[in-house]
Length: 115
Image 1 (tube, one colour):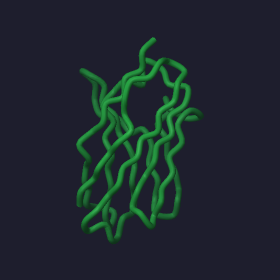
Image 2 (cartoon, helix red, strand yellow):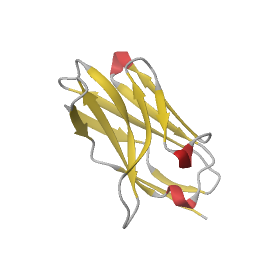
Image 3 (cartoon, one colour):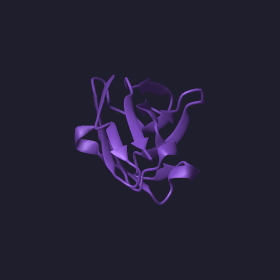
């Protein structure tokens, strides 16, 4: 399974970015797709996830500002990020889970929010 993420970049505080991640190769049985992020010197933490039944889950720090959505036919997940803050600066990693147990990760995309 390969994951290709795009959409990161530099934005001012209060701005918006939209990340996308497309999965390919052996995606049958996808149960979850989503995003983690890792800031310098910190652990990787969950940003948002979406299940095969479109159930969603968000990290506490992004609730009300970020929205995750998916296109099942294209095995693609999107992350709309609004009202960005400098503390949202991190490398964002797309992931997918196949059959509830096999996890795959994308290469990461940098998001930088300037104050």
